[in-house]
Structures are given as C-alpha cells and as structure tokens.
Length: 217
Ligand code: AP5
Ligand code: MG
Ligand code: ZN
View (cartoon, rainbow, N blue to C red):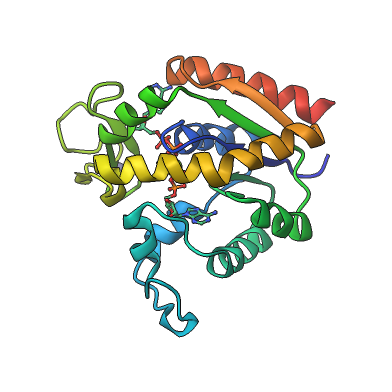
C-alpha cells in the first residue's frame, strides 16, 4: 500500500493539531501543518508581493488567511518532502482545494465537528511549549507544573492569535471561507465526519477507526 494521504479539517480549536500528532505516529506519516510552518517563519519578508502586510505574522495576528500565493508555495515544498502526510490547516478556501488537486491526491478528508462555544473556550485556554510545540489546555489538559512543558521542561506560552478578539475573527473567516471546502469534500465523497467534542482519547478512537475504514475501502 502506498503511504497514506490524509487531510484533517475543522474550525480553529477543533483539535486538528492534537489529533494530527496521534495520526502521524500511528500511520507513520508526516504532520504537515501550514499554521506551524508560518509560526516558524512568521517574520519572513514578503513585502515584495505588495500585500496588506509585509510578513505572515501580520495576517495571522489579525486572524486573516495568509494569501494563497504565499501558502501554496509552502504547501508544495512540504508535500514534496513528505512520505505520506496528515495535512492540517490546508486547504482553507476553494482556490486552495484546486491547488491541492494539482499537487496531491488525498485518500480521505476528516472533519472534526465541534460547536462554536466550545471552540472559544479551547482556544483562549490553550498553552503551547516554546521548545517542542506540545499543546496543553489550562482546564482540559493542564501540565503537571503550571507554565512548564511535561515533555521537555520548556516554557509554555499563549499564541498571539488566541486573544478573544482574534479568535472571533478566525471563526468568522472559517465560516466564510473554509466551510465551503467542507461542503465541497462532502459532495465529492471524500469527507468523513467525526465528533470532536469528546475527550481527546475518545476523539482519537473514533478518528483512528474512521481512517482505517477509509484506507481499506
Ligand atoms: P492554524 O495554526 O492552522 O490554526 P487554526 O486552524 O485556527 O487551528 P488551531 O491550531 O488554532 O486549532 P487546532 O484545531 O489545531 O486545535 P488544537 O489541537 O491546538 O493557523 C493559524 C493561522 O495561520 C491562520 O489563522 C492563518 O493566518 C494562517 N494559515 C494557516 N494555514 C493557512 C492556509 N492554508 N491559508 C492561509 N492562511 C493559513 O486544540 C485547541 C485547544 O483545545 C488546545 O488547548 C487543546 O489542548 C484543546 N483540546 C484539543 N482537543 C480537545 C478535546 N477533545 N477536548 C478538550 N480540549 C481539547
Ligand atoms: Mg493547530
Ligand atoms: Zn516541550
């Protein structure tokens, strides 16, 4: 069997990053996250493109999408190097769907369904390790020692775009631009919906079963 090609979708805070780590380990694929790629290159100079902001951080901190011409190139380079993938955070609009079709052929598109009130709570309480990227939540998944990563002892920080006003804008952008992508994959038959509101372990059990089904089918 060729390496699995998996896309995971869901609103901001739905649990894509949390679950992608499990998927990457279990199915031996690379976790490709456009959000993580931008956070690692947030001050990249894109001023020559004449866009609204001169860096990815400008768009991200405003809760807006980074323009397609920037994200598509990052996506292409990441997939070129991957042996199988779980793609987290792309595609986010219909133009990106078209671009993805030209460079890859996913086996399944997973969609984590989570209610909007739950999303805000998850995002505003999220903490991330500055060293290894492990994700925590102050109430739902706290580290043993406040502010310190269980895995590597690194300092935990709050993402710039997890402030309440930015969260609101990210959810609006999701509704306007990314929800049509979910409908598109529903129409093409690739979409598998998974309830994202259980505990992380419950969600993972459902997700794993859904992936196994899809890859066999
Ligand atoms: P990105 O990093 O992709 O952010 P996002 O899509 O908004 O999603 P998040 O990472 O916030 O949430 P998640 O679903 O990964 O949830 P997590 O597992 O962390 O993108 C950031 C920005 O980059 C965008 O706004 C845009 O500017 C730019 N960008 C990225 N891709 C782009 C693209 N393709 N085009 C243009 N621009 C792009 O979980 C959240 C919290 O909940 C955590 O605290 C976690 O511990 C907790 N949690 C997880 N699961 C559960 C559970 N089951 N129960 C309780 N708590 C849980
Ligand atoms: Mg994420
Ligand atoms: Zn860490």
